[in-house]
Every structure is written in C-alpha cells, then in structure tokens.
Length: 97
Image 1: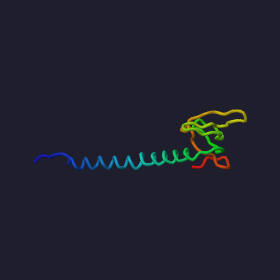
Image 2: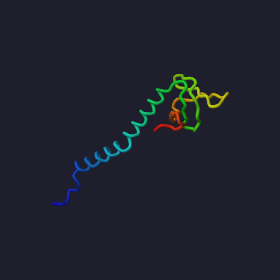
Image 3: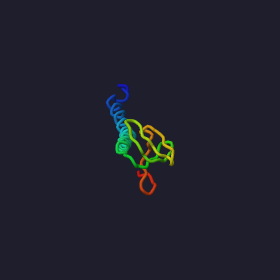
Image 4: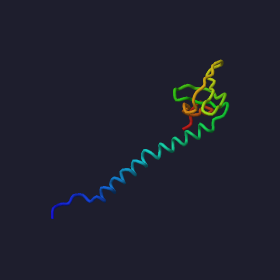
C-alpha cells in the first residue's frame, strides 16, 4: 500500500476553480468595459465633445461608417477612426466615468 499520489479529480477541480476565478476577475470586467465603450461610440452625434486616445479634444462635425470628422480648432478638422475615441466630454469639461 504505497501512496498513489493526488486524486486526479481533485486536481481537475482545482484547475477549474482557478479558471473560474480568472474569468470573473479578469475577463468579465474587460468585456463589460468594452461593451460600454461600444455603446458610447454608437451613440455619438454631431456636436458631441470628445477626447481621443491620443489626448486630442474636439467636437464631432461628421459621422461616417468607421470614421469621425472632428473640429479641433477654428479652421482645423481631422478625420479619425471611431475606435480612437476614449470618451465624451461632459458640459463641465470632465469626462464622465
């Protein structure tokens, strides 16, 4: 009667618990945040003030399928990808969380 080692079912259960913890702590919050950002991008309209991931502040003046036209100064407009938008700017100049 020598020691047979660890039960394979307990090892499998421990592995499943680790995967479950990883999912709930890492993957679920990232998916929730991604859905929230996609909803914000889909709700953009002309006149919205936004900030890009590069830190450029501007006002949306045109919307196309995958791009936006931003007015960043009096006579300066740029075309950027919708995915480059970090967030909307509230009326007080702050980005809502």
